[in-house]
Length: 93
Image 1 (cartoon, rainbow, N blue to C red):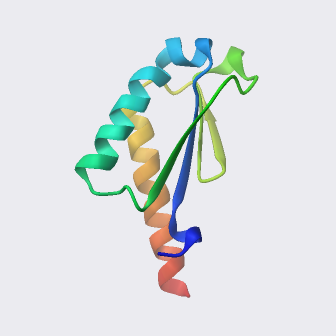
Image 2: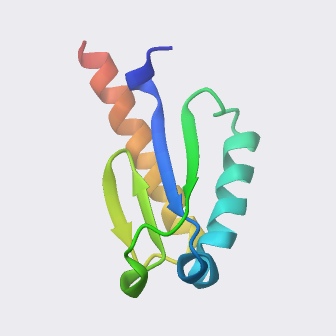
């Protein structure tokens, strides 16, 4: 699998974002990745404070930044959409 076929998902794990929902989002994302065999497709990365505490929780999916999403099902939907976009892009090449 080419590196550009992988989706990078970055979560802020600073205390504010962690408390506002990224703790649950991390757990749910790990479960989603494992249950769907996506370990080779998704690179999950945590960061200490990203400096966006006022608008947290903060997450970056495929280079696109999102803030204020504390519902992990919404984050998983965004990840699914990003994977579909990668697949569509791969089909074009």
